[in-house]
Image (cartoon, rainbow, N blue to C red):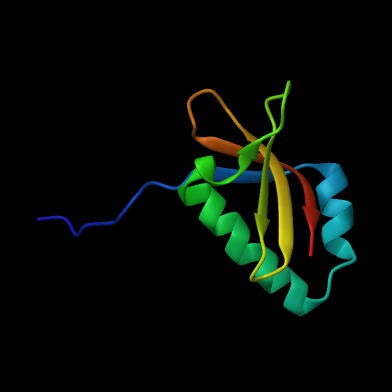
Length: 85
């Protein structure tokens, strides 16, 4: 019997503008942001839709991070376009 693995996570890809932003973050900020990205990969519906776009905007007030992303049609890939910590 296989173990219960929980929900399947989407693969996360970070595009160039967000990669540039990541390079400027401290280790603490990167750690907080990582938790938000993991949460999004498990549940891509966490963010709120950005009107008239395919983008979603997720803000975690506890960790003080923001991620703007979109999810592919099959929900197997999450593309991170913007990060803020």
